[in-house]
Structure formats: structure tokens, C-alpha cells
Amino acid sequence: MKKIVVTVIAITAVAFLFAQQQKEKIDNVKDKVVVFFNNKEADSIYSLAGAAFKKQLSDANFKNVAENQLFPLGKMKSVDFEKFTKGVSKYKVTFDNFTAGMYLSLDTTDKLEVFLFQPYKDESVKRTSAVATDNPLLTEQDKFIDTVVKQYFTDPNTVGASISVLKNGKIFFYNYGETKKGNHQLPTAHSIYEIGSISKTFTATLLAFAVHEGKVKLTDPVNKYLPKDIPALQFNGKPITLEGLSNHSSGLPRLPDNLKEVMEDNPYKNYDEPAMMEFLKHVKLTREQGAEYEYSNFAVGLLGVILEKVYKKPYDQLVLEKICTPLQMTQTQQYIGKKDTALFVSGHNEQGKPVSQWDFKAIAAAGAIRTNTTDLIKYANANLSTTIAGLNKALQLTHVKTFSKGTNEVGLGWHFIKLIDHMILSHGGGTGGFRTTISFDTDKKTAVVILANSAIDLQSEGYKILNRLGTTE
Image 1 (tube, one colour):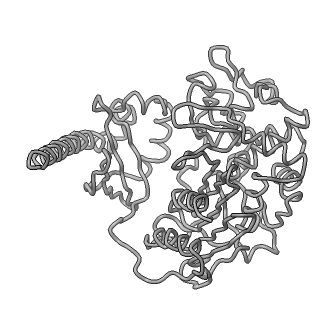
Image 2: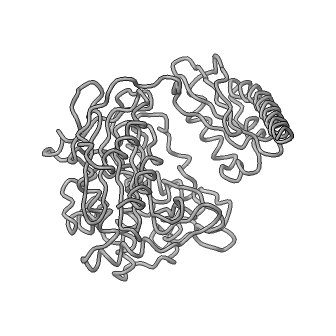
Image 3: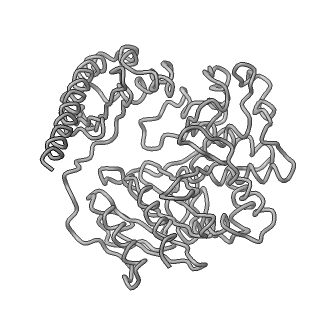
């Protein structure tokens, strides 16, 4: 027994020593980052990056991010270490008028693998006051959901959330917090939220409709639907296709380098189709479609523009006609109508401060939809089973896996996520003041929707609830 104890202590000591050495290495790289950052030397920062980082972000794209998003913050006035977790160091960085959390990690060659800035959040501060809710706390399901959601609300900058779950053919609704910080008004199942990137699954469904209606093929090159002056979007002779736009394997970047307002509260508001086409004229692809997974708002936005051309109708009208009207989703929309203005809750950033809504032009298909839990659980239910023939075929096509590499498995829009012992389909969403998630299990016929009016992530809460629904009666 003593030998075992000594061995455990020795292993623990070695692990501790390794962690300390790794932290010190990161600190050394951090010092270089600060100097290069304050001198606005994007190329020098990029030279510190490792192969995995460079594979995800080209030097040109990194320079664009640095010059348009990071350097405008000003010089780093102070950089304070906060914690080292799972190989990643977190620093509190103070600029002139902004405080950020900077996250750094190194690969096996001591090059940057993680280089990330987020609005600063003091993780030591917890909410101690009670959060309002209409959860009746009568069943084990009620109590479990309350436990999960209450843990989310320990963050003092969370504001409100609406949850809907589907199990055994029955739908349940739960609401927490406030529609606006400090107004003491509990949201309801009809409160409307921005759902951000969940919109991409609606766009994928429209693509599937177009396929079944014979208007397009998934293998069609995107240039088939673009102006003639757009160069061939291909690498090594392999073209980008409509499928690649939807499953994030096209090779197009997350954002275009001519999106000039990335630091603004409403970043996509003025990015229009001419700007999108101008970007396509000079974009330099670095790999073939299908070689890697790279999440791209731009690619799905482009897909939406193509579908508008195919149908000769605006994106919001296509969503209404093909999806919302058949499913009686009466409060799902891109533009909030007068009758629903009072139901649209206020968004808040990670510091709990009110922020602007997000508006879209050319990239609408990537994140423009607004809805509530009443409508979105109908959408989830339709993905599990619907008797509407055309819609059923389209939804089922979106569930067919079209990309698989490493941990990334994607259908059309939907991501395959492995829970404890089975796969689900899921998508999260986020705008400046909202975080959302929708997940469903096609085998167990369960679904979860969570909509929150703060920019604090809640994807894991959705997974926890869905997993529990599948293991209890």
C-alpha cells in the first residue's frame, strides 16, 4: 500500500512540475505577443503560431483579424495571469477602454496553438440571489432541468432563458430570469430571441427542398449560380459545391476580409451582395473542398444568396413559405413585425450589458432568424417526424452525413454530436447578445431547445438535458 501511495505522489509531483514548466513556456511566448501586439506587428505574432493554428487561419486572414478586430483595441496596458487549465493559460488584458480575457496554449513544438481573445469575465464572482422561474418543480424532469439551468445562472451576467423539451410526444416549457436585465419580467414560451447560427439549419433545409424539387444538385459548382466575372472557385481543379457551403468543408474562410465592421455592435448590417461578390473575385483558396472542416458564416451566407437566385425570392420569404407556414410557426421571422415587437427580448453581452440587435443583408442565411421556444420545438419535432411530404423529405436529407473527419461530422447544416453512448443532431447559435441551442435524438424522439438573452454559452446545458431525457421514463 505504501508503494502505491508513494507512486501516486510521485506521479502527481511530475504532473505538477510539467504543468509549471508548460505555464512558464506560455508566459515567455505571452511576453513576445504583448510586444508584437503593441507594435501592431501581425506578421511577427503569426510567426509564433504552430502548424495547427496556421492550418485553421492563413497569414492573410490572421492579418485581417489583427488589423480590424484586435489592434483597434489599443495597446495592452496590463496583462495579468489568472489561471492555467488543461494546458491553456488565461490572462486578464486591460486596454484603454476595454478589458479582455486572452487565452494561450502551445503545441508540442512550443508554438501557439490557442490564441484567443474574449470579453473579460471574472469567473470568481457568482450569483447568490434567486432567479425567477415558472418551473413547477413537480417531477424529476422538472427538478433536473432546474438544477442544470440554475447552475448556468450562477454566472451573474446571465439574464434570461426559455427552454422547451420534447419527450414521449409531449412538450414542456420552462422560463427563467428576465426579458431585460433589471425589469423583473419573466420570459414566456412566446418571447422572441435571436437564434443566430441555428438559422443555418433552416438554410440547409431550403437547400434540401431545392434538391428534391430538381432546382439544384448538391454537387453543383457554386460558380453555376454566380456572375460570370467571378473566377472559378476551385483548388487543384476541384470546385466548391453547394454541399460544401452547407457542411463547412468548402475552404472558404469563416468571414470575408472585406467585412470592415467586425468590432461594431451590429457587424453584418451593411455587408451586402456587391461586397460578397467583390470578395469572391480575389479570395485565395488554400485547400480542396472536403480536405478540412472550417466553420464559415460566409459560406452559408453565400448559399442563401444562391438560393434566392434559384427561387427568385428573398431569404425570409423562402423560410416562411417552405418551413414556417407548413409547421404553423407563426412567430419565426427575420424582421420583427409590429405585432411582435413587445415580445422581442433584449440581448446582453458577456458583461451583462444591453447590446444592439443584429441585422443582416448578404449573410442573412447564416444567422438572421428570430423565434421563440414555441416555434422552435415544433421545428425540432418536425425533424423527428412529420407527415408533410415535401418538408419531411427535405428534413431527412439534412440528416444525411456529408462530411466526416476527426471529431467533425456534419450533415447539411446539422452537426452530429456523440453523447455518452449515442449520436444526436445539434446546432448552437449566437449573436452579440444571445446564445441558443437546439438538439434532438432521432432514435429516442427527444428534443431540447434553449434560448438565452445573454452572450454566455449554454450548449453543454442542452446536451445534459437531452441526455437525461433519453435515460429516464
